[in-house]
Amino acid sequence: MENLKILVVDDEERMRKLVRDFLVKKGYTVLEAGDGCEAMDVFFENKDVALVILDVMMPKMDGYATCREIRNYSQVPIIMLTAKGEEQDELQGFDLGVDEYITKPFSPKILVARVEAILRRTNSLSGEEVLEAGGIRIDKAAHTVTIDGTPIDLSYKEFELLTYFLENNGIALSREKILNHVWNYDYFGDARTIDTHVKKLRSKMGEKGDLIKTIWGMGYKFELRHGK
Image 1 (tube, rainbow, N blue to C red):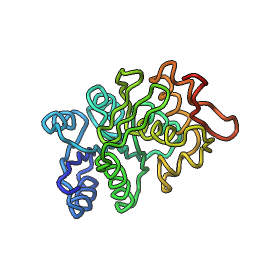
Image 2: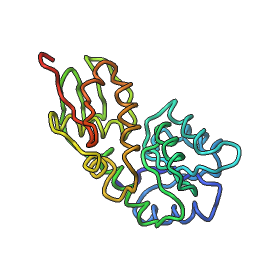
Image 3: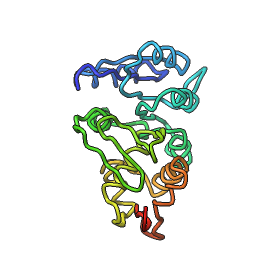
Image 4: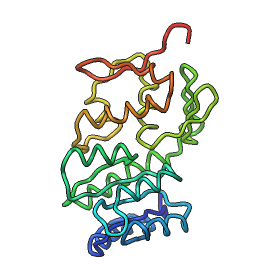
């Protein structure tokens, strides 16, 4: 995965240098921006950015506005950095399409591990593996989803979540299991993270969203109706 481009956006030069140094050691190409406006310029100049690390509190254009703007054009994975640890801030970020959330201060090694985990999956050579169920078709290699032949636009985490559901068709999945698989063992979130993503995923799936059943007090289950 060497030479993959990562855009680091933070108004603190010291923080950018810290993150850059750790990523460069791992063989990544690092692009930098000091605010959201500059980030958008860099993003559009480099169409092959593989991942964005985005600070929340920045002048001119904050992280949420920048994330919203990026999502108008791309589903590139986004890791949000914030000095705030409030759950509501995380939910706002996830609602905008943030894939991971890391609260400052953080260990650069943990950040790099998150980056590598995301890039391993989004850039993995998974051959021609395709999942199909109930008119839903997931192409893991192309990272695309169609429903009854119509493409739907999913964020990175929504794609991972739907893939996990189809891989476990008919199996009840606890929120803990979903967190461990889709968000990895080192994510310290809670059930609302999953509920927020499931709500958005169901909405994007239209009528097919009903195939994701809620199991009260436990989690969710993807289950095909008879005749579908």
